Amino acid sequence: MQLTKEQAETKKAVAARLLTIKENSYKNMMSMQSADLQEAEETNENEQNMFEDGKVDQSINRVEARASVVEALQHDINVLSNIEEIEPTEEIQLGDIIETDRGNFFVGAASDEFEVNGKKYRGISTKSPLYLALRGKHNGDSVEVNGMSFKLKNSF
Image (cartoon, rainbow, N blue to C red; front, side, top):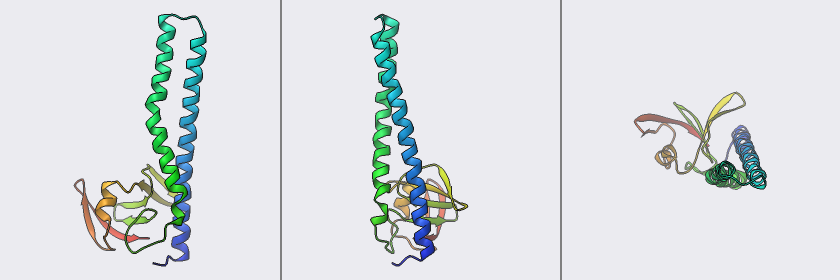
């Protein structure tokens, strides 16, 4: 499948925007992790008492709770960093833009809605119910996901 110049540019811009969103989230998360670890370290250096021990535990618990989010962000960044290497095909796949009657989606990583060149997109992963329902479908096909109907207008 050969993309038009406009489609290729749109795809590249959407992927770049989503990658920036994920990288910013990762930096923010790592900053919070660092601050919590520093707080735990500083608190631990003060006089030891029950209150101080509790504060250290809270800081460590926050770091541990965020670990899975950090790991997921690292995965998303890796996927999005290599998405341009995927050759377009007729079938919906990773790196595709999916235009439906209910909105525009980008297959790469789950995200809230974001805007590129005046159009709104929502990121979805290859594990999302919408992606799984649309896989193998063609323009004009409809699918139902979680009680909502989606009509595929275009994908590239």
